[in-house]
Length: 310
Image (cartoon, rainbow, N blue to C red; front, side, top):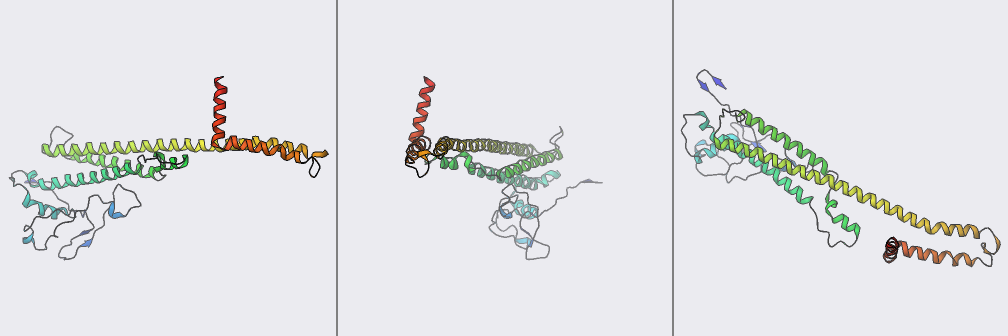
């Protein structure tokens, strides 16, 4: 903001916490803020704030003369209170230039951005651990192996959360770029100190790295979905194979029963009806042994391999 005799900077004090102190009030009032957190939507809103919660050693006194009595950690609820709290701890600088007066404010803004990105990084690490490979060496059967394997820890709602995370990181990167452009870092005439320019560049690189991590998790999700679909298709094919195997057993038996029921001595109630049971029962037993037992499947597999080698 420019005036006739100089430049002025307007500082806005937004509420960053759950409560904010009102003028001439000894009790803090609740403040409404937009929830922009990067976590699961099912969690409570207290876990999705921009900034991590810090418990201050002591609340600021309502008497301004007592503000500098003890050192306290910033509560990150009010930018103005944090400025007042940190100013006595800051190294004194000459006030010949207006940017030196806002040094603490600039550091607080950078600290808030760092806290926001670190909170997102913690959430990403938690997602990677939850979706990572689980030990399946002690699985007793293929079904248990599938449930405990890498593809077993993915759920349908993961895709929505990962897509939301990607959109959030894109928005954060765009906001960082706008801030850097507003500070003149995109042009040759910079209005910020070298340490501040390096800090903003580090934040931009960190946001890009977080987006790369989320994209990697999203690609793993797509691979897991593909593998799971292949397993489901193989399972269905195996079931169809079992049905075909059962058909190969019962179709000949049905043919024998149809021929035997035509009459003569092999019909139901005749003297040679026992022949019907002599033929199907051994056939069913041998077929079930070969098709539905491990040893029988091993014999069939070995016989097929010997036949192919011959």
